Length: 416
Image 1: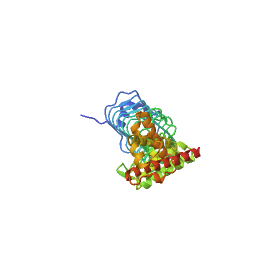
Image 2: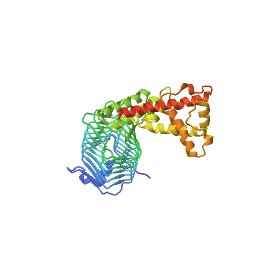
Image 3: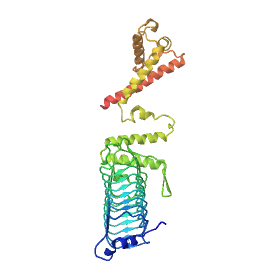
Image 4: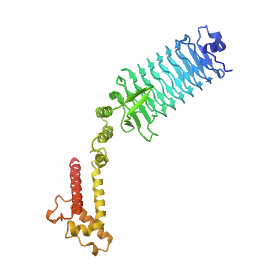
């Protein structure tokens, strides 16, 4: 028959001699605990609690507990669910090099002094939502193998995520920071997605720019709706704005409009401009212009300005397109050279192709015919046979594209 053992009972078994002494409660290298541990409701722990090298093989429940002393847990392993919801920690809390094999919950808890999770491994979901951290919190060198939730947390002091590894999305939806609370991700390995939405009361700085990007192939998608982005340090090389339409968390659905999406880009552009991040500004503006195109009357067409010259940021692409057009029309004209020269727009210097046996010479004359039309500023109207409607349209298409390319090339040269 399964037997539930309360924390209070464990105290009596293992540390009864210390229970009423001036010394802290100490668990060091005790045997593995195989029972479930349930703290009495709203129990108050007055003493310091130290524990190391213990394997907790069943669920742990400290919901609603108040810890008036320090907690220092080193190199312990929790194999089943760990619950520390609605708890109050009035002194230093240290979960150092601790393994949480199952889900760990620290919801609606108050951490009133320095908090340490250095070197921990969260194999299950880590949930800190709605908790308040009144002093510094150290989460450095931590591995989050599942989702990590800090939704609607309040940070009154700095949070150190340095050298931590996030293998799944991390959520800060609705979190708040004070002026003295900065979130730093120095040398951290970031996940594919990070949620910083609905944070209008963001006052401290969120520093993402010094994360570890060495082994990361794709940029991290950031969900940034309804957040003050002036406090974010990031670039648009390793990060991208993710334009989801809705998000459901904790039975609450957030819906995002086109205006929300435009606001994200406008704030990011202002951020990059203020910090002199030219390349990030360019990449962000390109995404913004693509969003505008997708929501315009021309949305059914490919995004022509993007492919043409990246919305003006890659003016040198005009030489690529000039080459493409010349190659395309020369290839077409290779087959239709006699027809064009005799029936659409004659050029006296182009001989009949029937008399040209060498294919390279025929290709040369096709190129000359094409480039002469493509790079001309004017066509001789009297030479055009307007009775050949399709041929005339084809001729005017070559000429018009040539004029456009000449104009863009002139602009490129003048800009240089």
